[in-house]
Length: 482
Image 1 (tube, rainbow, N blue to C red):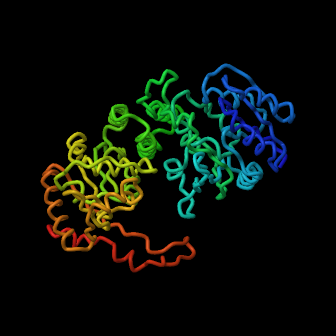
Image 2: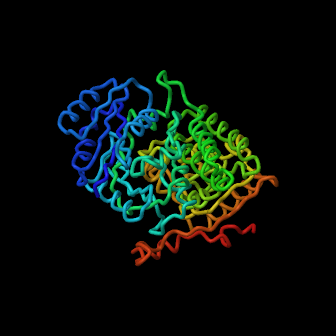
Image 3: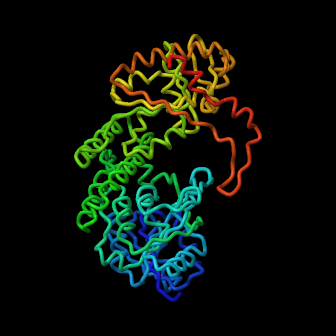
């Protein structure tokens, strides 16, 4: 293992995080590194820190240039790199000590041109972390097509051979979400891909000044409501340029809808309602233009996280504005009375609870005009709270809100399995069918709570297995109209 690995770090206003990142880079167990530290016109002390690191380690090449954006900065690194192998590192992240060693070893063992590892998603707000698998699901490796669709698109957490980039003239476009614009292309073009099922890269989330947190707004604050569209248009163009479009056309439709859905989910609580509505409209117009024969319907999703994970595999744009969670039909469709908005530490849960309080189902349904409504009834496992003449779903989301104690002290609980709730639910369901009308298809999916935990090799039942089984909704019982 004597190949030179060129690590490319595009630096922009990350002075507070650069030392941690660089310490992890220069301390790699694999020593034959070229470290390209490229300052992209930072306005903080990042450039000075880069110079200090370059003075301390002769493997570091410092380049100082005017601000052009992360894409052009990475491309410059690709052009300048002298190593046979390339790697990208974001300078607010950090690496495990054997990151390069393990990825390069896997690359040489398999002969693959591209190899990636799993990663840790580090919460910069509270220090928690989430494991993210990048090349498999439940221990089963992705096929190439699955990898193109479901693999995290970030260009970090991977090493690739420089000839892969040069032979195919791959360069990163200067667009928002630039990595998804080339990720699937790289996988399709690589002469072999490989995977290290270990989290060797630490990705820092929720950095206040990051592009994700600012919604990719312009420097003057103007909203960008075409997020991801230029990137996906570029991806299609590159598949066409490389002669791969006809082969991967159907795969690309799924890839693009999945990526745009992911962007919408990411921006749902970061944009104003008006800006988000425009972003969705722009995404739909692009999909109609690019895939006119595809499934471009609008649908509502009413139910659990599990239902969302089922629907994400459909090649349909997922609009989180059309999603309802933590709410029984009773709470959304019974006549409303004024209820104060609640606050919740989880922004998504707060939005969903307040949708229930404001009874937004009818308004959103009328605005979006869905062709299909998917329901899994999982939220009917919760009881109700009768509060000043109206009903709230006694969900785990509501229980975590700042108003739950007041709701309980002034309200009355109605158990999930009670006859009273069944009668209320049937009345609400009849109202739902009237609202849906004959033009809307209603698909009821039965999903079950997990009864066991573990991995593919061994599992054990949860201690409260009786409670779990007792809370599973039975469509035959709760859908008496059918």
